[in-house]
Length: 173
Image (tube, rainbow, N blue to C red; front, side, top):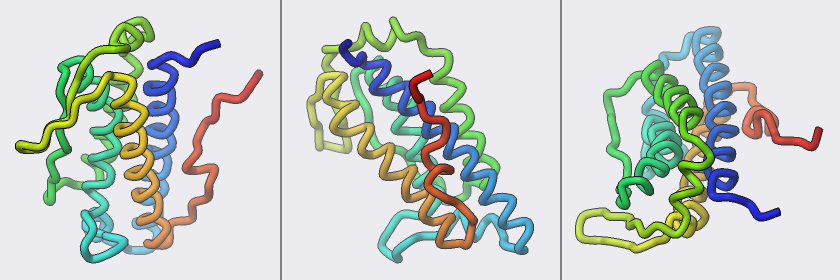
């Protein structure tokens, strides 16, 4: 059986968006229990020269629902950082991306296969097919930012394990 564009993208995105939502909930609970200001977490970084937690979470939503929207439009660009976004708003972004992908049909996504699209950042433009974009750009970025979100919360002392990151796997019944 061939793997469809929908299986590669939406199914993976929804699994990790759901687990990221749980990870964010655990982060919020940890902050409350330990008197940590959520604004401190929003601005946290693993390294000084790295974009903050807020950008990592924004990117998780952007490289999932935003990627599918980009394929439909034929163009995709980087997310816009928001230095003033709240932790609650970040949680909403992740939930909204998950819910938005739940409204996208398998037929709709699979019909995009082979479509031309490009990544644009200023004058920098990279041409892709829809499936090349998902496999070599969107999914790697999505997993990178989801992992970094998880890692920053672990750094802040949140009790998380690998199963929190993996979420509900699609196991054989």
